[in-house]
Length: 80
Image: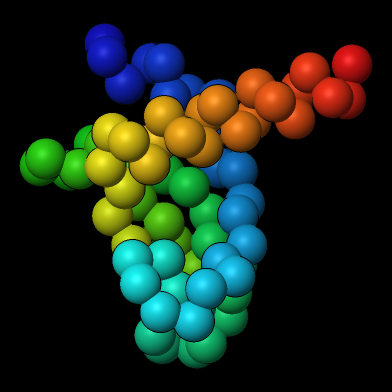
């Protein structure tokens, strides 16, 4: 049930703009956009998958998911 608060992020696309670190371009094809999946796996709260080839690019922790959710809320406020 705790995952439901992250439901608005499911399927959203994010652009990876860093060259190194946790979030980087796909190691398989080099594409820099990823889709968010909110299904938890072990201790991870979500994952990023390359939008071009579908490869797993990163695991997301609770803090990452909360930050993305906050950013989504800010976008909604600006769009209104």
